[in-house]
Length: 179
Image 1 (cartoon, rainbow, N blue to C red):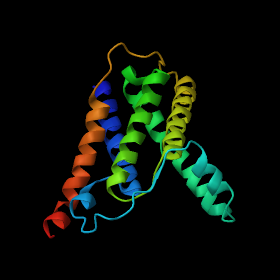
Image 2 (image 1 turned 60 degrees about the vertical axis):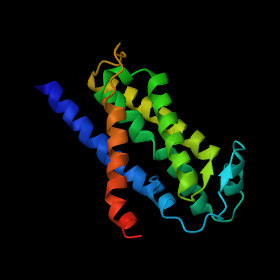
Image 3 (image 1 turned 90 degrees about the vertical axis):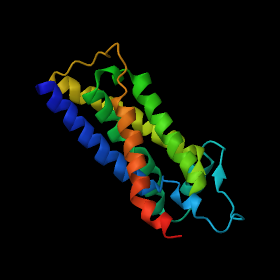
């Protein structure tokens, strides 16, 4: 019974967290479907650390901190929640790899929503997942949680992340149908 309660808590926390990440990043491509102006320019930055250096050279210190720290902190919960509730994700490579894949997913979606797509965001988000995994390790040791990775890689976290994204699209469907 305790295992089901933990899994249910993990499902709810991961779903709520991912919903807010999607809303924050504009990661649903429904705007792409209703675009009227196909001549718009895509903002794509593929040079590592270029955007970070550019942000750091501006006079807007608060904006710079929000941009860099925000991208880093946004993926810390993913790095904590997934290994905490699903033992198959307790290895750093699996958790950080999931962070990389989900960040790439967001960046690709941003190509279709005319937001900036940057390799620096990918780097910072992945680093955030790594920091989250380290936080998981710390919390697990403090509370005596087994940190060994399970042999079986559970699919549930990926299903949750995809299902929440689909729900976000469904919530925007009335707007799409109005066009």
